[in-house]
Each structure stands twice: as structure tokens, then as C-alpha cells.
Image (cartoon, rainbow, N blue to C red):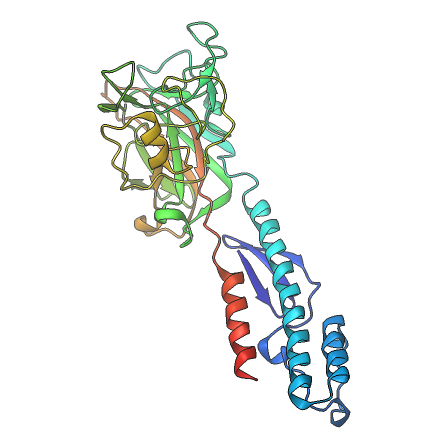
Length: 346
């Protein structure tokens, strides 16, 4: 998020503010106003930025007062637009800084638990991005294909299994923030290897979901934990590519899904074809969406997934991601407001 400050343009990512540039002078609607008579303002140096000079040249060329004012307004507007363009560039830079690593960074602890799959007992498999291509190296041989909501990841190094009484705790180097600009209020995504079931293998439609459950808890300090609603290994199954046409996974597609964008929680996934699921996902790569604000938290750094003792289930966890906020329409709003100010001063 970019915000204009008295001493420049800054990036704000969660609770951390990173200075990006200090190339602009102090900026406000008042600053944009040129003195009516520079010669009468001997107590302060005249403003001599290039855009001001443009306005003053136009003013000198057109001798009438109305045209002189028009020249000043033109100079003001051109200069302002240049600042807006720079601010937009800073917004792109901020997005790159804030979104450089949205994944969980380290494993705090891992207890495999009973009934866990011995082929998937490496906790570090849950770090980094969710899988897009699966099966290059699997218990069944090499059968690579893209991950779809009908065809989950199954390779050796693609997820970690947790059995009864087991748990996995991971941490984020940068806290996951309860950002009001996050889509649907979702701040955190958890990816398992659940998949939608079907009875039609020619033109499959969803008839249910194969979900093994799992409890998700979040914490700001690793001491106080809060249980989040939803199954860790459940909705919404992973989608690797948004241009996939093979429900059961074909070659890698050209359009990557967004693993930092949640599916709309209200999306009705029942009785859907792959094409309809992709439309409903709307660019998202799936995952269980968690709103930490609903738990009374402003930020978290730890996530724990567990399976109750005595359960017959085991779950698979692929990844965790910090949701990317939707950019605020601040630049456009600032431009509109300033244009309004300039028009009122005619």
C-alpha cells in the first residue's frame, strides 16, 4: 500500500513501513497553489520546478488574466500527473516488496502421528508454494500431470502426512496481517490434497469432496492459539492452472492460478464441471481461507495443523500462503480529488 507522506512515498506492508523514495518535495493541495504575485513574496524563494515553469511560460505568452490562470492550472495539472505516475510506479514496487515470499518459511515442529503415510513424512514439504505439477516421482512411478480440483497432488516430495495425535507447526518470517483489503476478508490459505469426487469420468461433474479433515490453529506468538473454522485438508481443492482443460490433469498450462488469492467462500461448487469450477475460482488456486480478524487477531506468525488422537484419518498438507491484498484505488481517488480542487479554483 502506498501512502503519501510529508517526506516522500513509502511502502506499507502489514505493520512494517519501508521507505521506497524521497524524491518528491512536500506535497499537498496547498503546495500546488502558485502565488498570485511572486514579486510580492520576497520572504520565500519562488517555486522553480519544471512544471511550474511550463505554467509561467504559458502565463507570459497569454497576457489576459483568464489565459494566465489557465496556463497556471495546466502547469499544476501536468506536475500533479507526473507525481501520480511516480506514485503508481511506487505502488508496483511496494507490491513486489510485500509479496516477494507469501509462503510459510520454517517448520517449528512436526509429530507424524499414528496412521500417517510413511511415504510423506518430510515436514519441509509443506514450505514453499503449493504444487502445480504432480506425479513426477510418486509411489506409483512417474506420471506427471497438472494439479486440478479433480486430481490432487500425490508425489513423494509434494506434501506431508499427519496422522492421529500428530501435528505440524510452521512459522512465517513476516506476519500474516488482518488486512481490510484482503479479498473476502480472508488472510491465510491452507492447501491440502483434497479433491472433488465424481461418478462421470468422461465429462465429470462434482458430486462431493474427498476431505480428511484436520484442525487449523493460528497464533501471533506461538503460545496462545486460536482454532479456525474449516478443515485443513478440505475446501477448496488446489488448481494449478487457470487454463486447464483436462479434469484429471494434463500438461502444464500457460495461465498460472494465484495461490495468494482465495476462492469466494460463497461459491457453490456442487455439480460443476472443471470449466465451471475454474470460472468460480476466478483466478484463485484454491485453498482453505481463514479470516484471522474473525478470531480477534490483527496478525499471526504461526499456524498449527493437527489430527485428534483416536482418529482413523490422516491428512496431507501441501502449503500455507499469506493472501495478497487488493490494491486500494488510492491513486485514482487522489487524482479525482485534486482535479476537483483545481476546478474549484477557476
